Picture 1 (cartoon, helix red, strand yellow):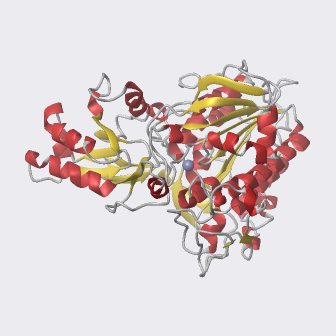
Picture 2 (cartoon, rainbow, N blue to C red):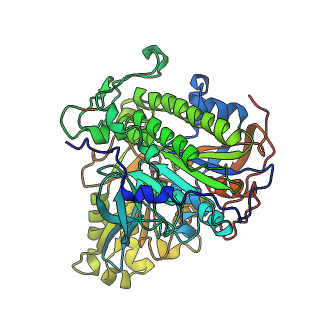
Picture 3 (cartoon, rainbow, N blue to C red):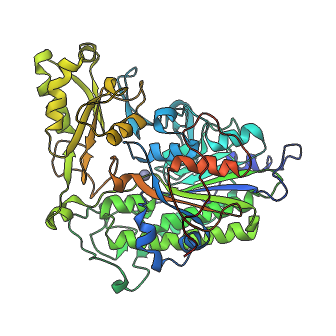
Length: 551
Ligand SMILES: [Zn+2]
């Protein structure tokens, strides 16, 4: 049973750090009245409409953001691959995937002849806090553009950059290649990477003073009376992880030994824990309190894990948001009290949205479905059989089809035409494009779809052909037409691209803003509050003229 996840004892790694904790005095500090702490909050898998749908039910952090924040109602990812690594890298760097290079959670590495994750770094080692465990490394070495945190540390090396998430890719892409520490949940506890900064990981004993194991016997129930939740609990097509049913209550221990780790992570308890870790870090590392600007990044993951299993209409997702509202409220209260209400600036966004559960949509007479990647692959193999015996496809990795080197060498508009036609004819795909033709117009592909493909395109890492899911359809692993999670994201459709973007802090005027913006604008907007230049990115500091006043 994997419950010894978070031993309270902390390794020598951590104690070494405490010796380094003295603040430097010689570095350029923040302006006397300017922000001393930049805060990035990401909610993993949060659609823009969640803010409006649940507005009346928020009383905590989301309430504060809606009432006192600059709320951008039209923030869209302008690219195709709306997935976690790409979104966090976009928020962290202010650049688009075509520039920062983290195009997917995983892509096919042609040189290695195998897929690699966006954080894979064989030169790095991963340490699990409180244990002597080390593992294969993760880092943000794949990034081709520095993050806001890296630029901050380049200007003032004493600046501390700390990020927290349940996911390695989220913590690392917010932090970058240089940071004080990025912390995420691995298989055996919270981890960090040897790659960061060449420093000892700065995590103190107090950070892990409330081990998650204490929640082992907790049961996740709805926070509020059942009749305040919209829709039904037992929704069509919900696919909970082993140990849970489709309806409340959800015991965190599940039904068998070994369930707890995943179920805790998938519950709002992990969000609350992460908020506490961040609050502890603010105090222990004196973030924003040392005469130098620091950066804190927090990516809450439970909304994504719950959303994949239960869908965006579920009681579980609603409850996770209501509880995140409280966790976020507690984090803001710490920031107000410890750093000072006027001394931090905060930007909140999401890494992507999500589709509704297609089976529930179809039962209601609306479109929706799943496109198995195994079928994508076999469709291309068959369509290209005239080119020789094959195989012609090296890998179908999400929206990217990678041809074998032999077939890629024969690729022309004519030789690939049968594959493009066959893919376009597949149910659930609205477009298929040979990536070599992305420089110009492509017949039969809408300009906005083409721009979305370009936004995710990296010549070295992308495939040879991009496929684009039709509205309400998504890609799933395997060959089964009913495969995959309850639902997912990762398309150029509105529900995947449209996310919240809210700023809070003294430089921002409360209200709703109608300008069309992007989560790539988050980092340069925070940077603008401390006059930190961020050249070489697509994001821009947002325009600060509200369309309508506070509501
Ligand atoms: Zn995500």
